[in-house]
Image 1 (cartoon, rainbow, N blue to C red):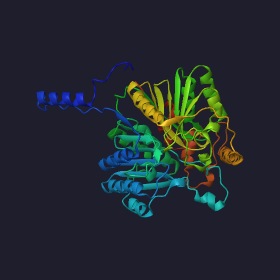
Image 2: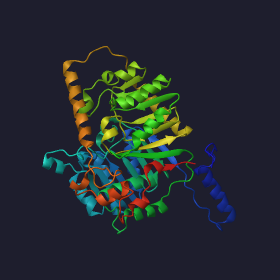
Image 3: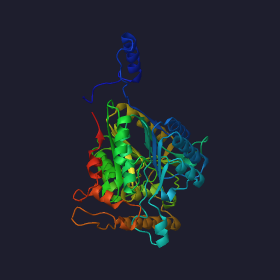
Length: 471
């Protein structure tokens, strides 16, 4: 199917009307099958985000799988947990994975969740590092992904499950996020990613003695992706140091930019290799704009001035804007008003070199790009433009800046000390052997094509660079 064909007329309303006429004419002699049409929306406000995911959890019939970086003991998070427990009681397969560093779930609700068959895992536990009192190379790696998949519904974005991500009604209205929600789109890839995470920790997603592969295959038949997605999408992830698909795709898009680049990045941290790519774009006449946050929640960035962080970019013509009244938390890049990405990927050292991340990239869709452009215009209207600064930061600020820069560098350096798990030049991974949670056989078979094993995972999972949806 050619990508320039207009399918606007072929939508759910058209199909329902045609089906009613067909059934009335043939008096139910023949059955006209339902067609899966894709739907999508971008959600900014926290109250709307929680309202929508709660509705989908309440409507779930088969499964609810969530992977998030932070989940606390607030009323907002506990409401989410209670709804997941109710889904368990209805017989749904419910999975909740939370990174251990930000795992503050209600213990009583967790006990009830597991009592009714829910699967919970606190990913990459930090207790063993604290016990040894020596942070290992895995200590700084965090599962920073934020994805949710429920039956035919999928969500990826920047919001975690805490009250600070809600609005005035369901939270504290602190963070400013963006989340991409869809129906009948991206389902198989999100399921596969959560399945891969379960395999990495040696977990079984359901209680019926099925492998995670079989579970995904069954759900693929029940809830397939629509064949009517008329634009290209890619899912990219990071699992350092071997998988760096997020930044590779971002760099690829920026290098191909011809007209403009807009970035919304709350934790932008200057990295020479990336700044050089942006400066090259500026020199070839591409307009580059960066919207960031004046205030940040992370101590490593809280005292850093944007005028100093972005000094090099500003001097080369980059326009920088600050959100001053809220904690900006959304992350996106948009190129030439037609390609963009949403997800968990920050433009800082941790996302680029340490954390596990996941982003959705969307290409050549006028409707989707218009949605994103409206969001960018909205956020930009609420921001203030920075100008070149001749002011030299004070000694205290310089000291704090250097301290956190050293901290980030050391965390990255520790993470980069790779060890070999096997022989051969292609085989270079972290030393997972000291971590009992990790399924070594799975990870070896997935990343190393020469590894000899009976493990079936290698046959099933496609590399992410082959994973696309286009027509």
